[in-house]
Amino acid sequence: MRQRPASARTSPPSAALDAAGHPALLLVDGVSSIGSMDFRMDEWGVDVAVTGSQKGFMLPAGLAIVAFSPKALAATETATLRRCFFDVRDMGRSQAAGGFPYTPPVGLLNGLKLATGLLLAEGLDNVFARHRRIADGVRAAVAAWGLELCAERADIRSDTVSAIRTPVGFDATRIVTHAAQVYDVAFGVGLGDVAGKVFRIGHLGALTDVMALSGVAAAEMAMVDLGLDVRLGSGVAAAQEVYRRTAAADLRAAA
Image (cartoon, rainbow, N blue to C red; front, side, top):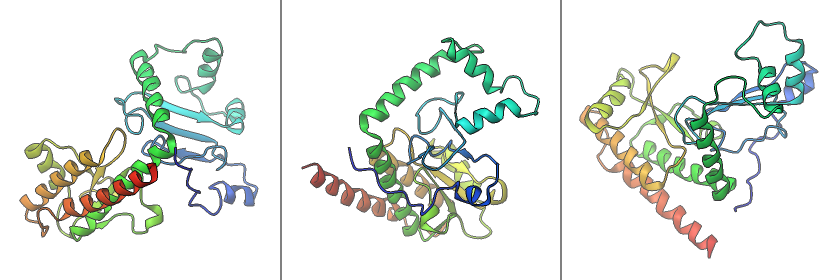
């Protein structure tokens, strides 16, 4: 297993709260990152982390995975917000007795056991490195197309999904619709303020270089079909260069 890379952060996310002496809890939405990118709940002072079964854990949607720090668990005892189904205390009491507070999603829980086994067998550092290199290939493709990522700085770019800006005046959702209807490939639309301005390529989970290349090729064909100034094959070739180069480096390291 590769050595865990040093965190890119110079200070943990909780540092601002600690410096201010503020009692607020630090909550992290890790749906698109946990299981695919380095995440250190205790080291970073995270109080509540949430992820789902459908992305890094390679399962159908439907299972929420939530972790609480001791501070967050203590807060559940004094919180005054009315809650029933989402009361984590019910979950804790049932788990302590070896049970589940509601009808358990047995299929998803069995799948989660298998998925976590696969991740641990690969080695988490290897999982994180694989996502980084696949993301690097997608980012190289975007540059070859002459387009830009929504995340402007390299240090905030995700290794699990890339939101790609389309030229001003072009509805990016057309790419998603066209790719689904013509090539049977699903991309993500832009949400909120970037609706119609970006489309998203997900590159996480049980993914290989070759699988990522098929997604890049589909996006490329859709954009060319719709008249964008993209040269067919340019993004695929750029991604191939990244994957060929990094695959050779991995082989040398293994030897």
